[in-house]
Length: 360
Image (tube, rainbow, N blue to C red; front, side, top):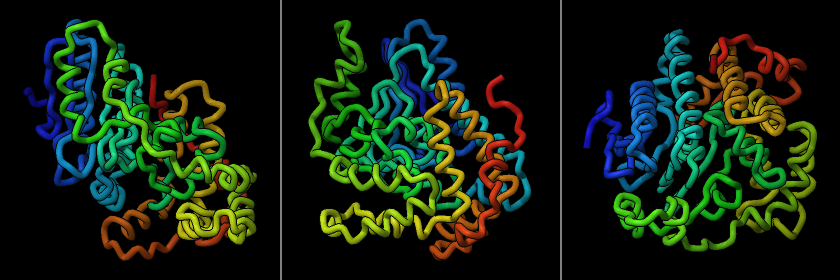
């Protein structure tokens, strides 16, 4: 095992397999700027290694692959007025997301356990994405007054029906079957079989592709609850505005077909009632805009513009992180707190915010 420029990122090479492992189990693999730099450096070194024909991305610890970006450090930087540090974090992160997607050899990612936010950016753009019975995937950004990023808007925009709007606005958590159905994962492998998958990738003696090899361990999970929920999700979340979505969810909440389901119009409405109006309005527009974009890079460019607008001009992100991650009082004070108090041009301002291009 070799150590990258950050000791929390491990690089290994076994025959034709390169392996990048996030080794920060005490923080469920949460990544900060030095870790992201190390991952980017490892990707560059391995892509230029002619011996490598497969890349494996995984993490250590039993709780998860990557819980996202190190939000507390980001919060501290923004509170201190160090927007340059926040900007560097996002620029390094998004370029790394693109590098994973564009890696010339197949990338296999094991999204075991908690894989959220920035973790989706690392695993979600791999070519073969494995989930296990412990996997919990989500884009929880609206919960902290933010908008899905790390290429999450690209994935959400391509989910079936209106699942993209639903998952983005409510921050709902996906189990393994949900993740496969929504297009965030490809294969379900029991956690007990992961070591065999790793061994097979390291020691395969025939020209079987990584995708074909992983299929040997693939099992069929139970059907996703999202399949049954699609009827009301597509109905409500196709509405033009957030207020229109809320109104339709209120109407559907009394429908006996879904009233007792864990995922229901009522639970979705309750989630939206907790989210900040600014993040919801911008996120709804972002998912719909991403459907019209040509590729992941374009989506990352759009996300970078939006995230910079949030960091530089909006108080909700700092307040959301404080309430959820720092003080943990779960009582954020959003500004504004009501849809009707949103400025009419808030979405336009977010989408026209001036930034330096992410990709030259």
